[in-house]
Image: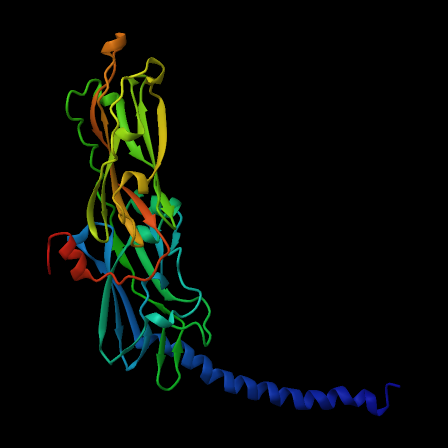
Length: 334
């Protein structure tokens, strides 16, 4: 059996298979080289935008050759690398899974397009905590982890495609934390009361979760005593829910450790306040107007303001975020 024709057949097949494998590698080599070279035709940069605040950045695309480019800021991803500690990755929650055809533009050689972004649209939770903790380096990637005919960010006329582009790193320094604003009005025991808003992400009208913190002081809290200053992509809006004057009820006074309430922004804010996807800075304010004179209680009253908190609004269509439009909204036209 070992000396027959069948015994020699594997050697014959090996003689055919080895040249075929070598030919396949020869074809794969140039294709791989083309894929590696493709990203050089598109440069993606992230630069500071100090006129708009510490979290805003200018995002630019520059084409080195005539080609089609997918201009969609949601395809940007970041890695936050602190001087010490673990690096964190940031990605837009609405990042497209394939090339967004509606965002493809034909760019000429040397043509540059620019939008602005808010880093908090990409970094949340622990990643945002790392961003706020101290200086770091921001590394950026633009595009998809794996390329295909449906996943590319740059496509030249000769058919060369780039699925992902690496940008240059940039330095980051967190903003200096400002002290909470001093209470106004006839505030008493002011250092013992603080107001805060819980950061949230929503695909529709957000729910605003407010908290009052205190060290055992007595207050009379109600949802309609809260108001908000909202600064978003379309400018600043004042949210003032309609208040219903009441006669305080003895059982509704509270001694603060922590008191919390939730309210829909549709109830608290004018219509359309959160209509555009993006990051909104929301400052909570509470007017504690009810004292305890009727019952002989020592009650804290006054106006208390918290620190701004990011509220992310997802979903909806793509709205171009042009730097000149933002500067106009902020009252600092280019």
